[in-house]
Structure formats: C-alpha cells, structure tokens
Amino acid sequence: MESTTELFSDMDARSREVFQRVVEGYLSSGEPMGSATLTQQMSQQVSAATIRNVMQDLELLGLLNSPHISAGRIPTELGLRMFVDGIMEVGDPDEKDQRKIAATIGNDGNVTNLLDRISSALSGLTQGASLVLAPKKSAPIKHIEFVSLAQDRALAILVFANGEVENRVFRPPTGQTPSQMREAVNFLNAVGQGKTLQELQGSISAEISHHRTEIDTLTAALVETGVAVLQDAGGSDERLIVRGRSNLLENDGTAEDLNRVRVLFDDLERKQDIVEFLNLTDTGEGVRIFIGSENKLFSLSGSSLVVSPYMNADRKVIGAVGVIGPTRLNYGRIVPIVNYTAQMVGRVLSDRS
Image 1 (cartoon, one colour):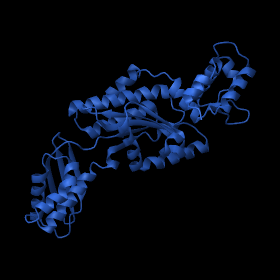
Image 2 (cartoon, one colour; image 1 turned 45 degrees about the horizontal axis):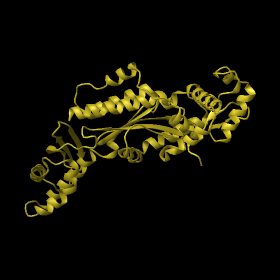
Image 3 (tube, one colour; image 1 turned 120 degrees about the vertical axis):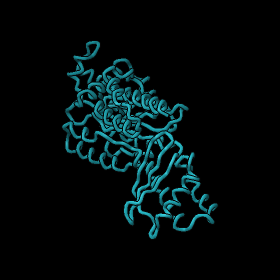
Image 4 (cartoon, helix red, strand yellow; image 1 turned 60 degrees about the horizontal axis):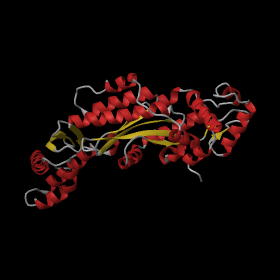
C-alpha cells in the first residue's frame, strides 16, 4: 500500500485542494463537506459535478469517506494522517496561549503542583483531556523517617535532596516495637542517604543480608515494607496527571460518539497502560500524533493523541505532556501548544534541579 507521502505526490493540484478544503472544513465544523460548499471555496471556478468526481476518486483512495449516502465527505484516519504529515503547517502558539501556559509556573517549587497546574491549563486551552507524565523520582535521598500513627498504621516520610517530600501511610509488620522502628530508620538513613529511590530499592535486600548480624527479622521486614511503600510514591499511577475529561462530553454528539467517550474514559482509568505507552516517547524527540486506530490503546474510542516528551538539562527524556480528544482535533493549533508546553516544562525542571 502506498504511503501517505506517495499518495499526496501522486495527486494533481485540484485533488489536493479539494482534499485540503474537505479536511480543514471538517476539523473546523465537524460536519461533512459537500460539493456545493466547496464550489464557493475553490481558488478557481469548478463545477459541483467536477468536485463530486474528485471526491469520489479521493474516496476510492481511502482518504475520504461519506458518512451518509447523500451527505458530503469527511476525512478517514488515513486522510487525517496525510493531512498532518504533508499539508498542515505548524508554527508557534499564539502569544495569548503562550502567556496562559507560562502563567502556570508559579514559585512554590513543588514539581507535582506545577505539573498539575500545567495539566489543567493544557486541558483548558485545547478543550481536550490533558495528560502529563511526571518525572520519576531521581533526586538523591536526604532523609527517611517513620512515624507511628496507631498499632497497625505508620507514616513513611521521604525527603529528597532537592527539597521534595513524599509521605505514605502503611501497615507495619505485626509485633513491631518503637525501638525496632527507630532501628529501621537509622539503618535506612545509613545505607540510603545519597542514593536515589530506585538505587535503594534495588540494593536493599543485599544491604539487609550484608548487615544480618546487626538487624533482627522484624526490623528487616519493616525496612523492606517501608521502602516498598516509598517506592510506590513514585509509581506509575502517581506519575500520570489527567485533567479535562469533562471537556470530551461538552460537545453535542451522537449516541455512538458518547459511547466512544465512555470507552475513552475507561481507557483513561487504566493509568498503567497509558504510562507504558507514554514511556515510548523516550525513543524520540518532538511531537508525535497518533490518530484513531494507529494508537492501539485508544483505538476502540476512535480518539487521537498529540504527545511530546520533555527533557532535563542533560537532554534525557524524563516525562511527557499530551492531549487526547476526538480525531477531529484542531491539530494545527494543538500541536504547537503541546510542543511549547513540553519545552517549557523541560526548561523549568532543568532550572529548578
């Protein structure tokens, strides 16, 4: 099968213009474009019959589709792919959008709060559902503390060298005593200071084995339980921020459209799957656009995802920002917004680190 680039290069100027006007009209209005409307928009005078013939040819190529027998045409997923790859012009976001995104930075220094504000701003600007994948906890550990809340509950507090703090309530091993809790904390601070959470998680069993004459069984169990709970503080579900789901319900649609949105909501609940998908952005730079069935995760809902990774000062991908919506996204506006947001997040986090 020909690629969209080959299909586009094989089309004559009139077919390209008809195709472009159908796609742009559909993305703007959500309505099929008919020959009568197109005759008024073409750069040169063309009859409605000629336009119908051109649209029929484009339909045979798999680029357009007719949702109803007597209706105009809308682009297929293949047509949308050809449009975003070969026709759509992408510039910078307008200054108003840039100011709204920049206004989310703030001065509180908390990365989670920053990313939450950015996710909310992104969903508001694009009227889609926004996704922000937060960085993994990679700062060295400064201090660990356990605080007893009740006989069967304790609080694990993790302080990072960059000033971030994570708290988690957990259930300590049965029979644990205050002295064992102090012993566990002292042990963790001795072996964990200066390590990242991932490094501590990977080495803790070996450290316990190495110090087995100095640490009793219950204390060792408390150490492993506490580290596992703290590791979960930077887990996949915690790393994904989703905002603006209600935006997908605001536009009037058919029963089929609403069912697709419900399916999409189910997809969004499976945060682990989405995190794994967004982690694929580690392999490349720049904005990526997944349209409908191209994205296996959202194929049933017929949604599109515009996503871009963001990097730290060492040019290493540490997270991603994106927007999900129907395939009828305003790609020309949303792509630069996502790209600008990703670059800004990368700069801010690099400066703060």
